[in-house]
Image (cartoon, rainbow, N blue to C red):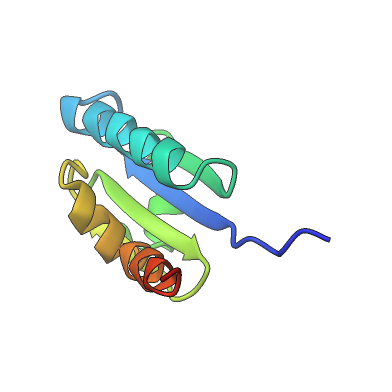
Length: 104
């Protein structure tokens, strides 16, 4: 039996096709494909088309990335251009580093 792998559930809130929104999505997809291939679900929400979803999740600025699962919920605002900040902000880098340290 395969060990259970965590699945990361993420939501990216954007406002239309602005340069920041496009950059955030492209950067996030690169990070996810390199670091979390096959263990993530990403939902992109355009707050211009779905303002009620942004309101429900208390999104005040775009682009905003929200990690829904695994808990705790984490949010990062901005174009996500600082890869390390994204990984740390989502609680992903810490786990990755601690798992790698155990490999010695």
